[in-house]
Length: 192
Image 1 (tube, one colour):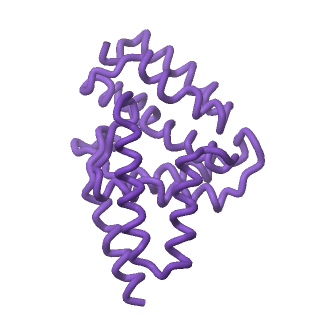
Image 2 (image 1 turned 90 degrees about the vertical axis):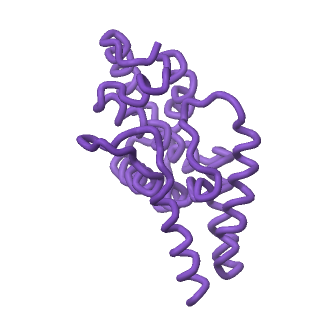
Protein backbone atom coordinates (compact mmCIF):
# COMPACT_ATOMS: atom_id res chain seq x y z
CA UNK A 1 0.00 0.00 0.00
CA UNK A 2 2.80 2.45 0.82
CA UNK A 3 4.29 2.02 -2.66
CA UNK A 4 0.98 3.02 -4.24
CA UNK A 5 0.65 6.03 -1.93
CA UNK A 6 4.23 7.09 -2.73
CA UNK A 7 3.49 6.81 -6.45
CA UNK A 8 0.27 8.84 -6.24
CA UNK A 9 1.96 11.55 -4.20
CA UNK A 10 4.79 11.67 -6.76
CA UNK A 11 2.16 12.21 -9.47
CA UNK A 12 0.92 15.27 -7.58
CA UNK A 13 4.01 17.03 -8.95
CA UNK A 14 2.40 16.94 -12.41
CA UNK A 15 0.04 19.67 -11.16
CA UNK A 16 3.03 21.99 -10.93
CA UNK A 17 4.22 21.48 -14.52
CA UNK A 18 3.11 24.57 -16.42
CA UNK A 19 2.23 24.40 -20.09
CA UNK A 20 2.03 27.24 -22.63
CA UNK A 21 -1.74 27.37 -23.08
CA UNK A 22 -4.22 29.09 -20.80
CA UNK A 23 -7.48 27.44 -19.70
CA UNK A 24 -10.51 29.28 -21.05
CA UNK A 25 -11.32 32.40 -19.09
CA UNK A 26 -8.28 32.16 -16.80
CA UNK A 27 -5.15 34.30 -16.64
CA UNK A 28 -2.88 31.42 -15.61
CA UNK A 29 -1.40 28.66 -17.76
CA UNK A 30 -2.76 25.12 -17.59
CA UNK A 31 -0.74 22.37 -15.95
CA UNK A 32 0.09 18.92 -17.28
CA UNK A 33 -2.31 17.15 -14.93
CA UNK A 34 -5.21 19.25 -16.24
CA UNK A 35 -4.11 18.56 -19.80
CA UNK A 36 -4.03 14.80 -19.23
CA UNK A 37 -7.51 14.80 -17.71
CA UNK A 38 -8.92 16.96 -20.51
CA UNK A 39 -7.53 14.89 -23.35
CA UNK A 40 -8.80 11.71 -21.69
CA UNK A 41 -12.25 13.30 -21.72
CA UNK A 42 -11.78 14.44 -25.33
CA UNK A 43 -10.84 10.91 -26.39
CA UNK A 44 -13.82 9.43 -24.56
CA UNK A 45 -16.11 11.92 -26.29
CA UNK A 46 -14.59 11.28 -29.75
CA UNK A 47 -14.27 7.47 -29.55
CA UNK A 48 -16.89 6.78 -32.21
CA UNK A 49 -14.86 8.86 -34.67
CA UNK A 50 -11.61 6.90 -34.33
CA UNK A 51 -10.01 5.89 -37.62
CA UNK A 52 -10.08 2.22 -36.57
CA UNK A 53 -11.85 0.22 -33.85
CA UNK A 54 -10.23 0.98 -30.50
CA UNK A 55 -10.30 -0.09 -26.88
CA UNK A 56 -11.21 3.29 -25.36
CA UNK A 57 -10.17 2.16 -21.88
CA UNK A 58 -6.64 1.52 -23.13
CA UNK A 59 -6.63 4.94 -24.82
CA UNK A 60 -7.67 6.66 -21.59
CA UNK A 61 -5.01 4.79 -19.60
CA UNK A 62 -2.38 5.88 -22.15
CA UNK A 63 -3.48 9.49 -21.95
CA UNK A 64 -3.34 9.43 -18.16
CA UNK A 65 0.30 8.24 -18.19
CA UNK A 66 1.68 9.86 -21.34
CA UNK A 67 2.99 13.05 -19.68
CA UNK A 68 4.18 11.63 -16.35
CA UNK A 69 7.81 12.03 -17.45
CA UNK A 70 7.24 15.78 -17.45
CA UNK A 71 7.50 15.64 -13.66
CA UNK A 72 11.26 15.61 -14.25
CA UNK A 73 11.63 17.09 -17.74
CA UNK A 74 9.01 19.83 -17.72
CA UNK A 75 6.71 20.46 -20.65
CA UNK A 76 7.82 21.29 -24.18
CA UNK A 77 5.32 23.08 -26.39
CA UNK A 78 3.87 20.65 -28.93
CA UNK A 79 4.99 22.88 -31.80
CA UNK A 80 8.71 22.58 -30.93
CA UNK A 81 10.57 21.05 -33.84
CA UNK A 82 13.99 20.21 -32.44
CA UNK A 83 15.46 18.19 -29.59
CA UNK A 84 12.76 15.52 -29.46
CA UNK A 85 15.13 12.54 -29.27
CA UNK A 86 16.96 13.84 -26.20
CA UNK A 87 13.68 14.90 -24.65
CA UNK A 88 12.09 11.49 -25.13
CA UNK A 89 15.17 9.74 -23.70
CA UNK A 90 14.92 11.94 -20.60
CA UNK A 91 11.19 11.23 -20.30
CA UNK A 92 11.81 7.48 -20.57
CA UNK A 93 14.33 7.68 -17.71
CA UNK A 94 11.82 9.70 -15.68
CA UNK A 95 8.86 7.37 -16.19
CA UNK A 96 11.04 4.34 -15.50
CA UNK A 97 11.96 5.85 -12.14
CA UNK A 98 8.44 7.01 -11.31
CA UNK A 99 6.67 3.81 -12.36
CA UNK A 100 9.40 1.96 -10.46
CA UNK A 101 7.87 3.26 -7.23
CA UNK A 102 5.07 0.75 -7.80
CA UNK A 103 5.16 -3.03 -7.43
CA UNK A 104 6.89 -4.56 -10.47
CA UNK A 105 3.80 -5.94 -12.28
CA UNK A 106 1.99 -2.60 -12.11
CA UNK A 107 5.13 -0.67 -13.04
CA UNK A 108 5.59 -2.89 -16.09
CA UNK A 109 1.97 -2.34 -17.23
CA UNK A 110 2.27 1.43 -16.97
CA UNK A 111 5.61 1.51 -18.76
CA UNK A 112 4.12 -0.66 -21.52
CA UNK A 113 1.27 1.86 -21.95
CA UNK A 114 3.71 4.77 -22.01
CA UNK A 115 5.86 3.06 -24.64
CA UNK A 116 2.83 2.12 -26.72
CA UNK A 117 1.78 5.77 -26.78
CA UNK A 118 5.29 6.91 -27.74
CA UNK A 119 5.58 4.40 -30.58
CA UNK A 120 2.11 5.23 -31.98
CA UNK A 121 1.96 1.81 -33.60
CA UNK A 122 -1.50 0.70 -32.48
CA UNK A 123 -4.95 2.12 -33.30
CA UNK A 124 -5.29 3.11 -29.64
CA UNK A 125 -1.98 4.96 -29.59
CA UNK A 126 -2.74 6.76 -32.85
CA UNK A 127 -6.12 7.85 -31.50
CA UNK A 128 -4.51 8.96 -28.22
CA UNK A 129 -1.99 11.01 -30.21
CA UNK A 130 -4.84 12.64 -32.12
CA UNK A 131 -6.47 13.77 -28.87
CA UNK A 132 -3.14 14.93 -27.43
CA UNK A 133 -2.29 17.01 -30.51
CA UNK A 134 -5.80 18.42 -30.87
CA UNK A 135 -6.36 19.83 -27.38
CA UNK A 136 -3.81 22.68 -27.57
CA UNK A 137 -5.28 23.60 -30.95
CA UNK A 138 -8.82 23.64 -29.58
CA UNK A 139 -7.73 25.88 -26.70
CA UNK A 140 -5.85 28.21 -29.03
CA UNK A 141 -8.84 28.47 -31.33
CA UNK A 142 -11.04 29.33 -28.35
CA UNK A 143 -8.43 31.75 -26.90
CA UNK A 144 -7.83 33.75 -30.11
CA UNK A 145 -4.49 32.05 -30.74
CA UNK A 146 -3.06 32.91 -27.31
CA UNK A 147 -0.08 30.55 -27.21
CA UNK A 148 0.51 30.75 -30.97
CA UNK A 149 0.84 34.51 -30.77
CA UNK A 150 2.85 34.50 -27.51
CA UNK A 151 5.34 31.95 -28.83
CA UNK A 152 5.60 33.01 -32.49
CA UNK A 153 4.00 29.83 -33.84
CA UNK A 154 2.99 30.03 -37.49
CA UNK A 155 0.06 28.35 -39.19
CA UNK A 156 2.48 26.20 -41.21
CA UNK A 157 4.28 25.03 -38.10
CA UNK A 158 1.03 24.06 -36.39
CA UNK A 159 -0.14 22.07 -39.39
CA UNK A 160 3.29 20.42 -39.79
CA UNK A 161 3.24 19.20 -36.16
CA UNK A 162 -0.38 18.10 -35.82
CA UNK A 163 -1.94 17.21 -39.17
CA UNK A 164 -0.51 13.73 -39.70
CA UNK A 165 -1.06 12.41 -36.14
CA UNK A 166 -4.62 13.73 -35.97
CA UNK A 167 -5.44 12.53 -39.47
CA UNK A 168 -4.07 9.05 -38.64
CA UNK A 169 -6.02 8.68 -35.39
CA UNK A 170 -9.22 10.60 -36.02
CA UNK A 171 -9.79 11.82 -39.59
CA UNK A 172 -13.11 13.47 -38.70
CA UNK A 173 -11.36 15.58 -36.08
CA UNK A 174 -8.73 16.63 -38.60
CA UNK A 175 -11.43 17.65 -41.10
CA UNK A 176 -13.00 19.80 -38.39
CA UNK A 177 -9.69 21.36 -37.31
CA UNK A 178 -8.36 21.91 -40.82
CA UNK A 179 -11.25 24.23 -41.64
CA UNK A 180 -10.94 26.10 -38.33
CA UNK A 181 -7.20 26.53 -38.70
CA UNK A 182 -7.70 28.12 -42.11
CA UNK A 183 -10.26 30.49 -40.57
CA UNK A 184 -7.81 31.29 -37.74
CA UNK A 185 -5.10 32.09 -40.27
CA UNK A 186 -7.45 34.44 -42.10
CA UNK A 187 -8.19 36.14 -38.75
CA UNK A 188 -4.46 36.57 -37.98
CA UNK A 189 -4.40 34.34 -34.89
CA UNK A 190 -0.92 32.94 -35.52
CA UNK A 191 2.45 34.32 -34.50
CA UNK A 192 3.75 34.85 -38.01
